[in-house]
Length: 82
Image 1 (cartoon, rainbow, N blue to C red):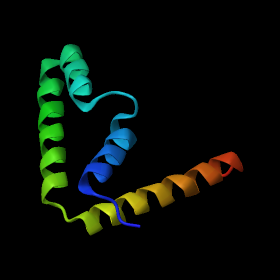
Image 2 (cartoon, helix red, strand yellow):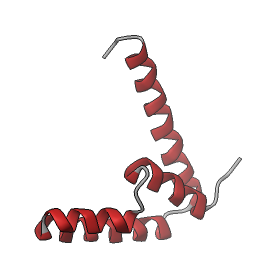
Image 3 (tube, rainbow, N blue to C red):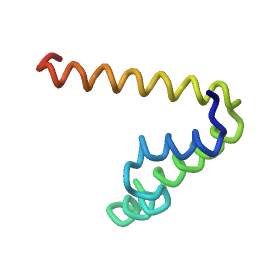
């Protein structure tokens, strides 16, 4: 089952920013440090550009890789292994 760019973007945003909306995250970082906030804004801008220019199949492969990696890490941690 393939996913759209919109779905991929939403999944990546949840993975990266968790419960925080990306623009709110940038504002929170900016509130802590204008220097870091500027970097956070640039990172988010690049994130959005990469989503737009990356083909859906590559985004899907990227997500599958991250989810598999996280699943394996969760399994190891639940078993008490590192």
